[in-house]
Image (cartoon, rainbow, N blue to C red; front, side):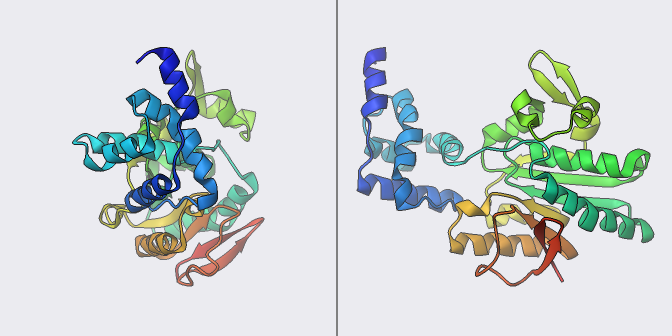
Length: 289
């Protein structure tokens, strides 16, 4: 296909109401992500270049590829990348993280130390490009210092997109990822390379990344039981039914007395009452009784 023809295809491709509903329902069935009717433009904007790359003229052709083509599972990876938003940074929402540190992490570590159980397991659900789980690892390094080597710590970080998981494992970040990061932390836990700032191996060692779908109940059961679950700015993409499923999965995973942390703009109001709300400085967490 000629370049001019490809550019024309990218510019003029449109999605009908029927195609939008088909594609939206397909994505929901695979990921639990719900796209409202008012965001129909999102599909046209984000998928236009993908249709162009595949040489497809209509969204109907794309839907056929996703449902009938033998290589449809490979294309599903691109779909997940196109429907998710990966806006994040290190030490994002500092006030909330300070509250988690003071009201959850420090008391939890003290309790574990008192019981001579020097272990901690955290689950980051929807880790995007890895800034959040690496931030938690850095926080634990700061809290425990030289004592860290005595602890068995595992941060399990999952994301829907295999491409994002690959980026997480690479552990290299550009300046934009540090817009909310103290310079002293950046200098202490990263090394500068021609490609960007690379996370130190000691920080990366605490984190295990895996591509996983929050809509896959069987896969979620493989996550080790956790003292703390982070799922910030993720459930806003789900409808109420999916939110309930995910919250229940978190509840089943969290150890008694453990906590769930959502994004500062997210709430379990009208969704679930299985957790006890806990006010932190500047935010909210949810504790399993």
